[in-house]
Image (cartoon, rainbow, N blue to C red):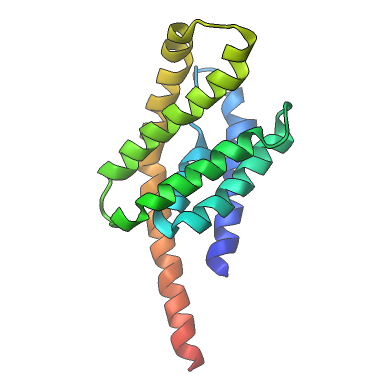
Length: 172
C-alpha cells in the first residue's frame, strides 16, 4: 500500500515539475517527458496491469491539464504502460540497456502519436522539421533523465519492498 501511495505521489510530482517548472527554464528547448518515463518504468517493473493503471493516472492528469479531446493522452499512456508491462519478464534490476531502449521507443511512439493526431490531421506535413527541432531534443533529454530517474526509482522501490517484507514478518 505504501508503494502505491508513493508511486501516485511520484506521478503527481512529476506532472507538476513537467508542466509548471520545465516551461519556465529558458535554456531548455525541449523538456523530458517525466510522466512517460514513470509510466514505462512502472509497466516495466510491475507488469501490464500496474503499467496500465499508472498510465491511466498519468494520462488523466495530462487530459485534465491540456485541451483537446478527453482521453487523447490517456490512450497513449495506457498503451505505453501495457506494452512495457509485456517486457517485464525481461526485467533485471541492474540492467539499464533495455530501459534506455524502451525510453527511446516510447518517446518515438508518443511523439509520432502527437504528430499524427495533432499536426498531420491539420495538413502540417513537415515531419522532418518536427523530428529535428522537437522530437530529437526531447529524446536526448529523456534519455539523460531516464538514466538518473530510473536508478533513483529502483533504489526507492527496493527500499519500499524491504520495508514491506519487514512489516510482514513483524506481524507474524
